[in-house]
Image (cartoon, rainbow, N blue to C red; front, side, top):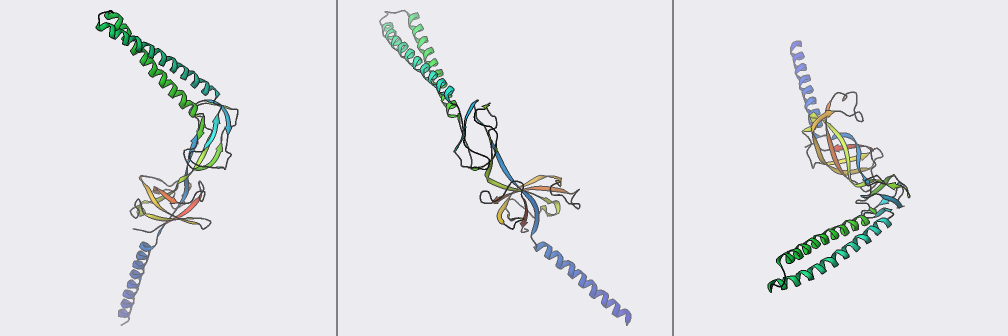
Length: 273
């Protein structure tokens, strides 16, 4: 009798244990996946395509800038002078070609009456073609000089915030030298990492919730899952994950401008597939 009761209790305990295990398994499948990451905002380095002396710097660090706004300007007097010279050379080439064209037409009419030699006619034709080519070169030089004059004004291609002002008026800057660094409004990303057991629960386009430590919450979606495993970065590793292989996620966040800052830690919540 005692043996039967013991066996019965053992069976009941086993059933309760497996029921608990199954309940926890189902609960774990239903619970959202929580990841931790950092805000990753792209920065844009602005510089002139030409060299020259800085005449104006219109923005300070922290200022907002809109796409298309002029943010700095070079002293454009040398480029204005160069454009004037190129335009004068173009007029000279136009006049020379017009004169050569008239001479060629006269010789063309005389050649039909055998009043001019073939060699004189050929020389006139060659001169006309040569001057036409020189006019094309003069036109190209005017276009190039006009582009350089336009490039003396530096415009921001995107909306953003100035994070670095790297030069001051009066400085001589080289082509491509950094003048401003702009933190872009869009896109705003979160860089997070997921371990291999949970990798199959995620897919590009999947909706997520992003929450800051201050409690603000934003929506977003998974934009990219790295195909390459890597060791957990030091910025997010714990003692348990120190030697784990993880996969990097890029999460695109629907956040208003300036709501999230570069490097800000955030919590990402994802409903499992």
